[in-house]
Amino acid sequence: MNSKAYQDLPRCQWCLGSEIYVRYHDEEWGVPEHDDQRLFAKLILDGAQAGLSWITILKKREGYYQAFEGLDPEKMARYSEAKMAALMNDPGIVRNRLKIAAAVTNARAYLKLREEVGSFDAYLWGFVGGRPIRNAWNSMKEIPATSRESDAMCKDLRKRGFKFVGSTICYAFMQAVGMVNDHRVDCFRYDEV
Image: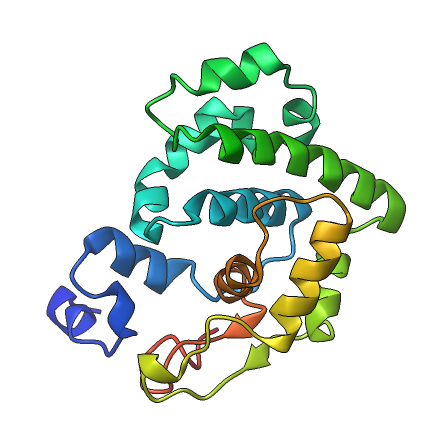
């Protein structure tokens, strides 16, 4: 496809105006994800977004992978108070004490949940019956910030000890990992994902 035709493709409005957003929208957002490790990493990144724009996290994503050793829950679960304090000096991540502590808490909760239920993928996708919810929005105004499913996910994750997993964060996570197809119907990615 020539680059002019590619630039002219209809896209969701939220990604317009930033090359990093367009690339994320076109290549990742809404693509069904089923890898436990990638789902965990995405949940951590979505939690880090709380109160910030997603582009801030996209720009720091590599920094998160470096600072948190590949966002590996096995390693993160062993972080000491000293390690968490050191992360406060890392400019590659959002330096928020509560969010750093939550990432470590979530790694521990993830390992416990995985031990209990086996598959993080099956657990998470169970909130949508194992298949993506395919919405049919015509404008960004129609897209909700939460859903019945994200409310249920939030409630259960919190019960299991996870932090920074409010319903809005859960819904954004569900959109990102393809549990919900919230591309606008006129977006070229709507039928692709």
